[in-house]
Length: 235
Image 1 (spheres, rainbow, N blue to C red):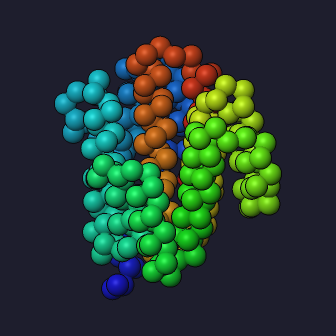
Image 2 (image 1 turned 180 degrees about the vertical axis):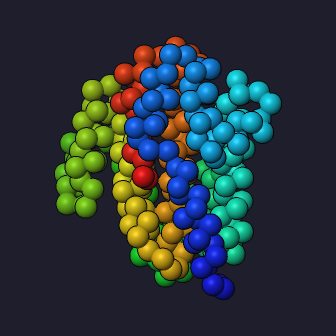
């Protein structure tokens, strides 16, 4: 791979427009959908995205197109690094979870990035937990099995919520937050592929948050309820 200095410079510039948790909550608590869109448009990046899209009511398509555009840019900036290619595949192909995880593991074997390997390990652990619970496995036994991994508290939080109503939403949120927490170290690195991996994860979570927020505004969901499902922010 050639020099990534220019690419990392681009990433640092783009990071300056990532949405903070405070800003996301302002959008969430806007009085209605149109007000939420107007507030989001105050951010330079999202203002340009909204302006370029004819119908903001079709916000899911807008977010999906933006996600694909950013991923395409990251693939280009990384010179199609194996880490970015592996993370990208679920957005461009109809992958089963097992196939996606296998691709991540194969890429991790070839990668020099300890950060990427940690992300893959977390993905493998959470997928094993979800698969076990889907198959009727005991939540308490699952908790015991993963009691000593680095993110055992997040696993416990997600499984305790699952036990209340067999809802995977809390586990999904904890998994995403672990990925983001792991990726945040890349903000302080100036060389290598990690800053691009970190930005990949950050924009994935930002778009997921906007999907949650705009869907709730469009459907009149109580923002206090939606707030509980928001992922953390990279900034």
